[in-house]
Amino acid sequence: MAKIQEQIEVLKGTAVIAAEESGLSAKRFFSSMSKWQKLTFFICAVLIIPGYFASFYVAKTITAAKYKNGLLVAHPAFAESKPISATPVKVFKIAENQFTAYFQVTNNNLDLVAPEIPYTVDFYNAASEKVSSYNATFFLLPDQKKYIIVPRVNSTDEIVSAKLNITQTKWQKRLNVPDVSFTTPTPDVYDDDALPQLVVEGSVINKSAYAIQNIQIVFVLFDKSGNVSAVSARSENNVAAFGRRAYKQLWPGLQASQISKVQVFVDVNTLDTGNLHYEPAGNSSANNPDLQ
Image (cartoon, rainbow, N blue to C red; front, top):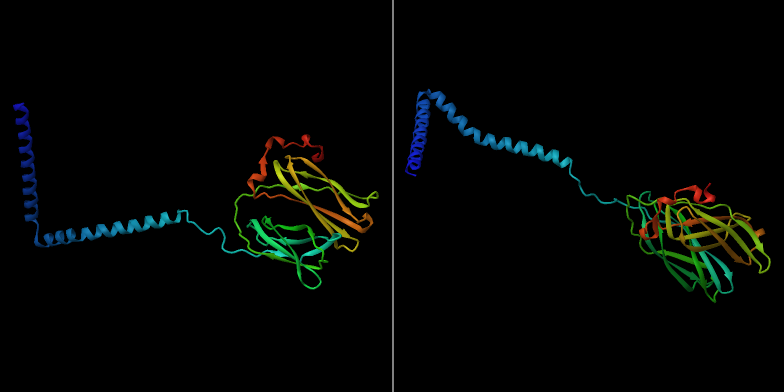
């Protein structure tokens, strides 16, 4: 133990002697310098401190500028949106004290959607008195144009006009909207003489790998002059992926000879994730002869 302490003392003494010798060497070196060399050394010693901080600041500024270019900066989803275009509401009498109506809407935004758009249609008699109102919502996909059908409206007064009011549109920008499409083969149009009534019969075919909880089939009938003469819509549930859904739509009082053509549209809310279920296993035309 005493030997270890002795070695420690020796090392301490050696370190002290080395420090003293370094100090003496530096002192001798400084003393050997000329007056102008001492002045130059002093100026360099004074300038090295601000020089260090200046170079540090420059390096920090350059690094920050490079880093800023790589930052993910939050931008607004969209700067502005275009309003919806809507046609005037057209009213049809379908039975005694019963009416229906339609209008068309267009989304003038190429990359914006609106999952839920509230609207009101007010119905008026010949004296411009409001006799009924209908409230509902619709959705719009990017750059979409579609018919909105107002179902049966009851009124003891004769409805001669209607006014549409779209209260508010909350637009969204979505990066991914599922691609769902349907084919609508030309339907059969014929008379049911027993009632009598017009019959439009056909089917729609899901061309996507999505099973769909709900779709709306819209029917627009045109007269011989090319004007819309009747409209209707129906909902269908649980449409299989690549599946076919048949329909048979009736119009009491109309005749096939009055109709020049029938357009059939399928409206699918692809903005509602609960409305779609992806089924890639069904992606085969062999499973559906209508797709072959």
